[in-house]
Amino acid sequence: MTIQEQKDFIGHYIATIWNLGDTGRLEQFLHPGYVDHSLPPALPGNATGLQQWIALTHESFQPETIIEEQVAEPGKCIIKVTMRMKHIGLWRGISPTGLTVSIPGYRCFRLQDDRIAEHWGLIDGNALERKLALKS
Image (cartoon, rainbow, N blue to C red; front, side):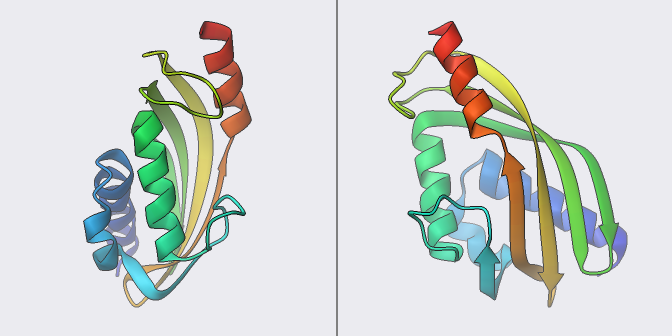
């Protein structure tokens, strides 16, 4: 993959998997040995855990991840994101508010064989919780 193809691939992954919640297509994006280093500790750090996390997220929110910046080199891609989250279901004990809040974050991907082999993320879920609690 060229650098631009990597960037496009990650953009397509975010749009399809995170924004639409289409976990039925995870296989086309994830390497068979995929490892996720940023899932909650209760979930396995693999494709199954990612699928569970996406389902849980979509039960509580209508998420929209916007890629603000993207930096790539062969086999790696880092994105700076803004996550707009419309609160539609119970999350961390907070009843649905219908509000949309935004939080910043970062995601780092390692690619292997034209698919995502590893993922690290830094998304401030506590900031999201504070914003919802203040507005509810």
